[in-house]
Image 1 (cartoon, rainbow over the protein chains, first blue to last red):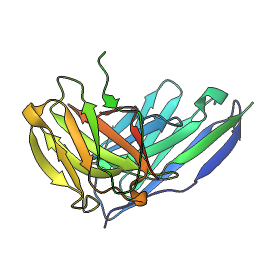
Image 2: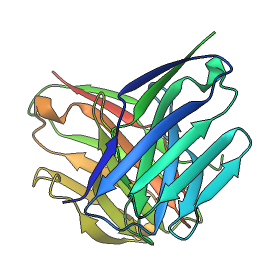
Image 3: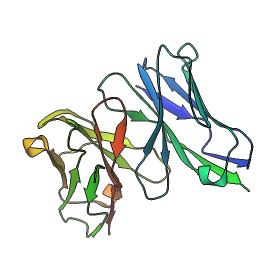
Image 4: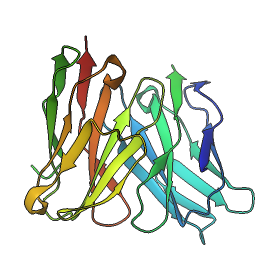
Length: 111
Length: 111
C-alpha cells in the first residue's frame, strides 16, 4: 500500500536558520506533490505544489525539491521566523485523485 | 466569504448518539473531500464527491458513516451510533484544480 513518511515528528531550529523537512514515499508514482501548513485547531493551508517533471519550485522564502528517483521531496524555509512555527504536511496525488497525506512535521522556530 | 465553511466547529456527544456535520465548499469547486484527523496524524481520506456523485470511499468509512452532497453544493457527513474511537477532527476540502482548500474542521468528542 502507499506509504508516506515525514522523517521528523518535530524539528527545532534557531531563528534565521534554514529549516529542511523531508517527505519520502513508497509504492506510489504521484504526478503531484504538495506541501501544506497546519496551525493548531485549524485546517491545512496550501503552500506549494510541484509536478513530477519539475525538480524545484520556489515561493518567497520557501523552496521545494522533488526527486522521483529517490521518491523524496525536501521542503526548505530560509531565514526562518518564529511565525513559521507550525506543522507542515506533505501530500501526494495524481490528477483528481484524493490527496494522501503524511503525518506531518512540527516545526518550532526559536527566537 | 469565499472559503470552505464547516459547521459546527465543535461537537460533544454521548456514545451511541448520531451526529451530522455540514460542509459548504467554495461555490465554483465541483470536487469535495472529507478527511478525518487525529492528534499527531495527518488527514486521512474518507470520501470524495464530484458534483453530487460520491466517487470514492475509503475502507476507513464504516457502515456507520454516510455522506451526501445533494445538488452538488453543500455536503453532510453523518455518523450513526457514535463510538469513542470516532473522536477526531473532521475536515472538509474542495478543489477545482490541484490545490485543496480546507475548512476549519469540526472537532468531535464522543464521551
